[in-house]
Length: 283
Image (tube, rainbow, N blue to C red; front, side, top):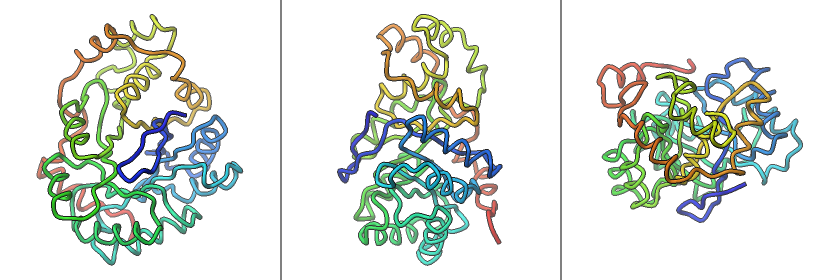
C-alpha cells in the first residue's frame, strides 16, 4: 500500500476505509472486517458516526495485528474544550477497544478548538495519539491554529472530489506541512457523479469504474482518501486502483469539472455553523 509521510514522520496509508453513515452496527462491523480482509490498513471513524464500537469489534475480529492498522477517529463539537476533550478521547478509545490512536481529528472548526488542541497536544506527547489533526478547517482557521500552537496539524480532512477539487487549498496545506485528506470523494453521487460523461469516458478507456478513476485521481494528487461502501464487491473494487495511471489528458478532463464550490454546504454559512453547533451526539 502506498503511504504518505506526515509532518512528524508517521506514515499513513494513502487509501483507507471510511464508515460515515454506516449507523447499523452489524453492517458497520461486517464492512470494516471485509475491508481489512481485502487489504485496507486504514480505518476512519468519528464519535459523531455512532459506530466506534462496531469498528473496534471488527478490528479485533480481523486478527490483523494492531500495529498494522492506522485508526482515525474524531472529536465532536459538543466535546470541545480541554477537559471535555480528555474525556471524549478516553471514551472513544474505550469504544474502539484500543490502547492508542493513530490519528485524532477535531471534527469541525467550531466550539473551543483551542482548548481541545492543548489537550490533544498533551495526549500526543504522552504517546496516546501518534498524530493529531483537524477536519473542515478553511485556510484562515488552519493558519490561526498553526500560528498560536506548538504542534502543527498533521492532517486536514476536507471535502475533496472532482466537483470541488481544493487545488489552492492543497497547495496552502503543503506549504505549511499539513496533509490533505478527502472526505466525500464521490460527492455522495451528487451532480450525477457516476454517470458524468467525462468520468465515464476515462473509466471506459482504462477498463475501470468511475469510482476507481476518482480514487486514482485523488491518490495521484497525493490526497489521502477514505471511500465508504457496505457492499463487499465495491469495497474490493475501491481497493484495486494502483494497477493503472491517469495520463495528462485524463487529468485535464477531470480538472475541467471543478466548480470550486461545495456540493453540500458552506462551513462559513452562519446557519450551518449554528446547526452543527447544536447537534448533540450524547446527553
